[in-house]
Length: 487
Image (cartoon, rainbow, N blue to C red; front, side, top):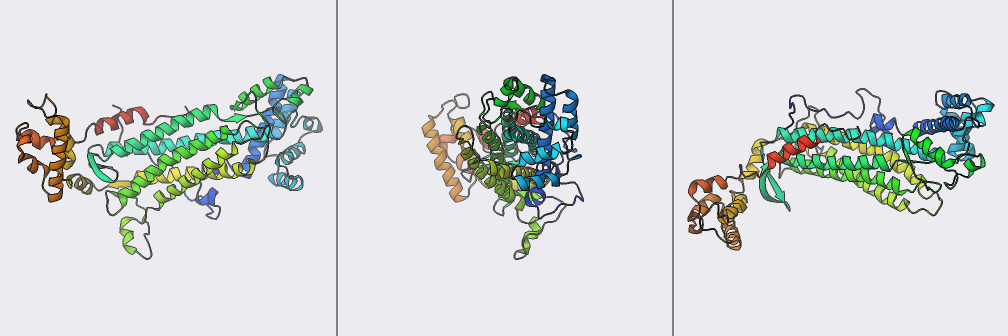
């Protein structure tokens, strides 16, 4: 089994560095965002990505067809294709006049290069040959960041599962007490589900981040007019950018690829919604096994000041429930966007720009806030054990039934239906009359004629009846802890 140092725990990632001037009025960027994700999205960042793919287009074209674009002119374009040389306000000004973002970017770039170089900007390209690969690079960077944040949360959950590997806990089924386990076991379940989500993220990262250089309908008309093999050009261009491509795109690649990315976000959101609800459930008064141990004091309610003692309401957990609801809506929108009259319309364009930018920011914010909650959650050990013992031991009835029907345990085994009905009757009697299950069993001749007192006391101790809970936690640790998804 892998060993971890529980004295040096994985620290939750901060949303913004300390003393960073976050403006809470900028919701998805400030109040509900993270610095790293903000640095991927926004108008200036989108300008940078678009300029970057224009630079790469010139370099790839010059490498393959130096007789069309000389490398020195391509390098001039690449050098100047940056907001270090272009004023973002100039791009906005041209866009306001033309109503077209790519025309504005290209115009601003033309203004800072020589006329000779300007003749080669956007050569053999349509606007989607810039916006699509630029967006693909934003997706790529965003998924890398999401993977890193999810891995952080996963490792915190695994450490929590190991820290509580020996603490009694009652699992529930349909909200009823079911069978005993250990307090770390649910966190191993959620960690494995995050690992599954990361595996799917990796598949999408490798297969659904799609760029394009195919002209107006994806058939390389301008390339052919220049005597260029457009198929080879697109292949090399996307390879240079580190993204995928379609052999037969329309004006855009199929938007099912973008739905894949949205599904990754929504699927991870569902798992983390389960984590958030589980922690909130555990903090509730009726369960009361979890406590927030964060040194930061949280206000509960002006109307209910007694909540201060509970470190406030579970607002971080509930906020991730809000993230999940938002991502569900994005998923439905992304699926509807897949309807694409060949070769293109703009039905998906505006909502995708909004939903991906805000969605990635909101999701990363939620993951990191949830990781912080998971890190600081503490266990009320006595209460957790009390929830196991309050069953009077009847939750061990299945184990007694198994012994009664096992010829290796008893000389005259019962048939299963008889043992099942008997245990149901005796367990119900113990529960209804608040009598220890062992006491009821010891008064039943059908049971005592088959199992001795010592064995019965051993197999009806609910604290020890945990199956392979500990082993499962150790397996999850070995398989998932500190695993880098995109390495």
